[in-house]
Image (tube, rainbow, N blue to C red; front, side, top):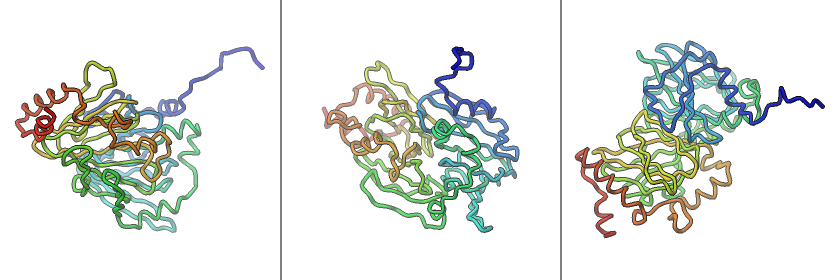
Length: 362
């Protein structure tokens, strides 16, 4: 046994080592405007396609985000990988082709606000069909798996097939009734999240709507939520790793930790992405005259939660913090929050639908 320490390495993040070898831009921060992120050629995609990796402070241990840009008339190489991912189209139009086996391929076209997920380790390719570049957000669990296996060849070149996941492509979209706030849409492709029907979930706030999405039977979670004009949600505590991006409308989100003397404000609108850090309290606000709709993605779906912590917390999502849950009732929120709300909605000129809540409280 050598007594030297010259080659001793510890506290290794194999995912970040892999990122350094890929030589694409890396964007960091609490939140980012994806429209402003510069991309660079990523040979792994082929075809002159470009990308950037988005490493937000709240990404946690599991989730990675890639911003993929496909030039007009260009397509990627055939891709496959042994991790789950979710694609959300930010801008542009294109198509996805997925190999079904025995020479058969399924293709579908997509445009802005589409959501889709190729089944695990299935060969697929993306193509740009517009006169402008197509930009897609890809959320995935690559960071966790790269740190587990530490083997690029295993993750990107493994021949394993998952026919039970591939079968989802041949199925119609299915609405699975569970309970308010937990209803599921099971699918592999949604052409327009802005047009997706959302059930009501009044426990989150007046007129609030939400549906959870199981994509290609994967372990990735996605949900789409909508707030009516002139309203805001109840506050809530979250684990790290939940990434939120606007779909339509415009508003803002306040973030804070217990004991903080100030709130941090992030914009909530199309193209704006942020990730909640661990044990962060947050609250969404829509001071506009139109509904505000957003997408959230994370690791661990409602069908396959993966983490015991997530399973436990899911059971108390709607329960007040004072009763051991995750939610802050309006009656218990910091009074500064409503004062800030009045300033925000006064600036937009929209009508507030929250005043009756606080008149009743008074």
